[in-house]
Image (cartoon, rainbow, N blue to C red; front, side, top):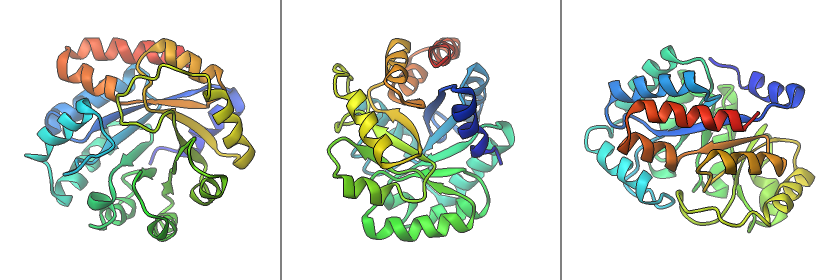
Length: 257
């Protein structure tokens, strides 16, 4: 499996920020999805975040919600998810992170199957309850798989400390809205970064609302170690030829340097 430690060491030792790209699994089809993700990794992605299609993707804006809705019609069984991730794992060498809602990932025990088969380096489950978090984290740890907590600026220090226990990477949500919402005001971002640094030594990844290379540069300049871009990647896939997506990712990666 691709080493998550290498990613973190590169951030700490080489001071190089990382770029994560989000894709909905099997969108628009299994074959096309794997082909597109391979191209995106070659263009500069350091990490691939795979969204498991959900019946109720309540944190998603219109772009990613459309991808969930169209994909679930042909891709909604655990066996399909495992087969897709097995094929993808053979094709790329960067870490794979699974983003899923509790209903599809925890309640079904899909996370255990994925972790036991070494198909992912980490899980991001934004709606996980406090009670389930401790249990899931322990079970993943037995499989050398990590839980990446989602932290936002409205959380108390107590909740941040609880969520970020035993983790090497934290997903820092730039705003409390849905994915795809414009990130217009960065005034609070440096203070948010400093707040998390006081509470954790983890590597910090910023996400939500990061739509272009200029925003990537600004977020990295605020002190974050990496960024994740989701809605703009999914929208570009939906509306543009793959060459446009490849160029977009290349521009994003250049902005992390």
